[in-house]
Length: 268
Image 1 (cartoon, helix red, strand yellow):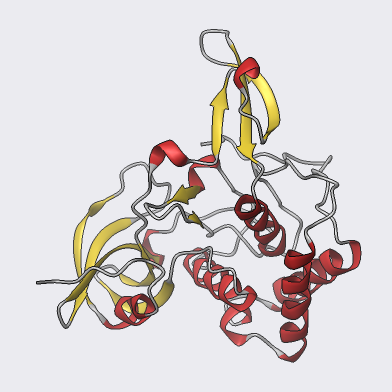
Image 2 (cartoon, one colour):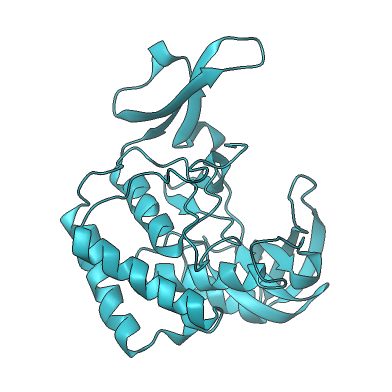
């Protein structure tokens, strides 16, 4: 019988790096080429996502052929923080479409998503409203997210990686009620680009435990974190150090940008 480990299992990263890949299909709604596949080795199998460099759509504000590497860097940073909030992600030279990243697939529970659209009068207790608007039929709606420690941790992570595209659909809750963040291709820019749906803590102090983890990351960066920084250019590495230092110094969530969009569109 073939075993299927959970995405948090320590053996998953080795399986992703060394297993045999078999393409199952392509995700049609992804902006860049995104393939769902099986990765198998020695009677163990795991669904995974492959994003090949050859399938990247060029962006005006990010260097070409760097998005998949930023996905790998985001996973590495999550591991250095000890947060394990990005699914295991590895670089492979031998995907069926050439070099690219391979990431564990998350079987999400859609009804458990921590970001949602509701009527302004129906916002659940313990949720923060980010914005209000009207739907296609003119009815008022509110974009809200859960104010829980796991969501707050992902909000801090987005600040550190300078996530330019944290949509509501990029937060997945698995069958063990564990929260994961996916789609980190547009991260680590040298210029401030934080666009996220997780603004519920804007201007507020961060939890002491989160700050302690960021302080440890700052110490690691002082001596070099190659599995993160190898994917970034010199300006991007310097900007990462600066963002970490700012979080440690202020201990607060930033306020949204006033000279550019602070929320991605679409929000899902």
